[in-house]
Length: 464
Image (tube, rainbow, N blue to C red; front, side, top):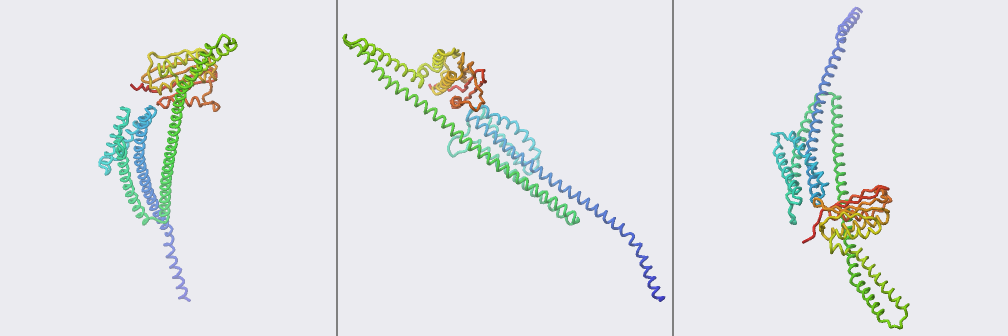
């Protein structure tokens, strides 16, 4: 018993001696926990810093690539604008060219920071700047001269296309350099992340996995957005190409129909003048001869009928002449545009008061251009006669700065130019005739306030 008591006493004592050590374990756990928290916090902050650096690097890379793409797009817009201007001679196409010229300088200035002196791809950037300068100089010469400077020999590319091809190639090289740098940076950050994984807890690994997942989603979204933008751009380009082709086809068809109609009018006018005119003249002469050949026994009724026949044939000849004049105005070919317009105004003045403001001398446009202007005035007078109920009409023609300006103004009922019920065939015909010569047509009208039609086109002189 005493031994057992002693043994139990020693055991209790031993437990008493251990308990003071257990009292410090929670402090140790708190300390370890604090250390772990501090380590995790430091690791989290370091990880966050690495993540921020990676994101900034990606964003900086995307910004640089975007600036390269913007430079290429700006140059392509400028080239398209210049070619549109040179093909149509319309100043409206130069707006995009001027805007591109205003943007390209600041863009290159920003890219100077992207490719600082001493950078690996600085030399390639200098090559790109030189190519852009040559291309801009080439486009400026084209705009100044007003003609295409590229050679037209089949199978050969002009300097403009060569410059653009070299610019695209240089930008591709810079983008590849940028992609290689990005790959290297990403590799470095991945190595750091791997090193961090050996020093952090499951929480740090989870946080790292979350960041990597978010980063992957962001990259995937970026790729998807780029792909969608590429597809949209491709579709837009395809649709624009289709619209342009359809527009050209319709314009060519309208030009063909207009020319065919004028040729048919001229053919009918010649046939009526040569054949019908000869028949009517012969019939009138025969009727006159028969009237003179009638004997004294012929009754007065027969003589009166012959006289009416001669008058009817004469009226037919007059109608024939008026139809021929409408089909192919003889004054237009014989005396010019001004006299033809004056005769048109004089003929219309029997119905409405017409004030003709015509130049002297005649500006002498080409025959097809003079015919187009005459048809515009003729169509305008026809519309005034049918619909306007005008009291005063003004017809004007002038040559200013190498541009012919024809206008017709009336004080009639007018119309709403935006009305869907408006019959636009006549106006569409006028507009197409003007566009055939690189001009423009303006129609200004309001209900109850008359109408003003103005056609402008560059003068195309008669061939000497």
